[in-house]
Amino acid sequence: MGVVVAMALAKCDSFWGEANIFSEGPALRDVEGALFVPRVQMLFDDDLNYGIYDANGYRIVEAAYRRGPGPTYVGSSERSIYNPADFPWAPDENYIYGGIAYFHYGHFLLATFSRYWVDPADTPDAKWIYHFDAPSTHWTGVPFVQQINEAAGIPSSDVVWLQEPVRLPRLRIPAPAFEETLQAFAKYRTLGLRVGGNLVGQETASQSGRPVYITKQLLGNGVRKFVNEEIIADLFDQAGFEIVCPEALSLKQQIELFEQRPLIVGMLGSALHTSIFARRVCPILALNNSSDVQSNFTLIDGLVNADTTYVYPTDGVLGGDDSSTFLAKFLLRDTRETAAELLDLARRKLDGEILFA
View (cartoon, helix red, strand yellow):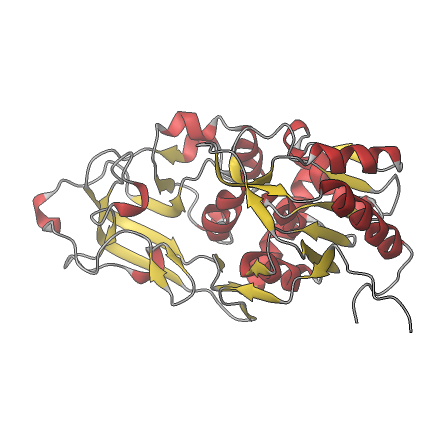
């Protein structure tokens, strides 16, 4: 009788959230006399007053920030506590709503960029407005924000910061083409290809270079992190993988990783969302902390037709040290064993093997 060997890693067998992809939509709505109420800094998701409301004070659904499952609304209210008629008119005639002005790369791609599918050329004199948690110049100065906005046809000079409630003469509202852990539209992929093409250029994407291990070792803040990840990165380095810190690369260089390399391995994280810009998406092997994968990742996989394998440690993880810079930190129980098996899976995936039946 053969010996059964326990595996350190197993395939993630479920996802959290909803994962519906639609070929038609989302909606585009033009509104006159809408009330814009800015976000209160530091309240973030708990601000029930911010939002965009119609002339009667009711929430405009296309402008709302929602997440799945549900959906559930993130802040704002069904009806404003304010009477729109009590507020002055904004100084410009035409505006386009760009959503929440996120500083975090992943949230920006999913919740802000997802409204950029509208063509700014249709309303060339329009100003872009957002709900800010900090001065607008701080946001437009973030390198990835500046690069993506310009590639989408939104120069910083067209971004205005409305700091008080105002009525908007004419507002164009592109509903989001991606809503976190809820749904996505084919138009989000079309948008990613258009902007990605502007960032990278139109030359044909072809495979070249070494396989890549994406590390979070130098990342200062984010959603999740394995605190002992350097052991994994060292093993992959010794095996000939190129160790890459995405935040040290330009967005163009990050996109080229997905288009040109034979394989990307790394911890589950926002860097994987960059595939939305790539014309060719290489195979991906991602290490998660649990068997449940957030449906944001599977939604993007579906849009870009990615060959992604998600795995997790079968013996679980421990809580890492407390830190305000990451929402969660984890400690692998046996990092060396996990690293060795992850490397074995990577080599097999490079060879084209189906890892899990």
